[in-house]
Image 1 (tube, rainbow, N blue to C red):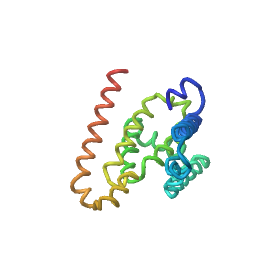
Image 2: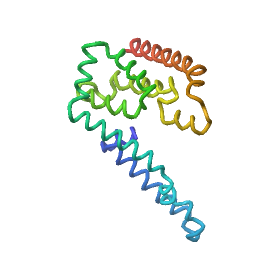
Image 3: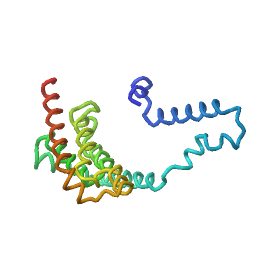
Length: 190
C-alpha cells in the first residue's frame, strides 16, 4: 500500500479495492474451465461469506466512537493535557503503549490520529513511527491487550493470571528494551 499511495497519490483504500478486484479476476481466470460446483468454494465470493462479521462490526464501532470523540474535541483536549502534564513526546507515546496492554491498539492508534494532526506531525515523524512500535507491542504486556491475545485465550485456554505471572514481566521488559533501542537509534541517526 505505501508503494501504491506513493506512485499514484490515491488513498490506500483504493489500492486495497484494486487488489481485491485483481484477486477476483485472477481467481476467475485460473478456475474458468471448472464447472460451477467445483469452483464454488474457490471463489472470492465464497471467501467473503466466511468473514467474521462481529469482528468487522467491533472495529467499525470503535472507529465511530473515536470519530465522535475527535469531533467533540475531547481527543485534542487530552493531547493538550498530556503535553502540559508530561511534556515529552517520547514519554507520552510510551504511556500510550502501556495503555495498549489494556485497550486494543486499533482504537488507541485511531484516537492518537485524532489527538495529533498530520500538519504538526507528518506521517514519517518520530511520533507516528514510535507510536507504531509502542501501540503494536505494548498490547503483549497483558494478554487482553490485543484481539490476537484474546483469541489465543479462547483457543489455547490460556489463563489471564497465568499469563500475568509467566509472560507479562518478560513482555514488559522486551517492550521497554525495544523502546530504548528505537529511541537510541532515532536520536543517533537524527
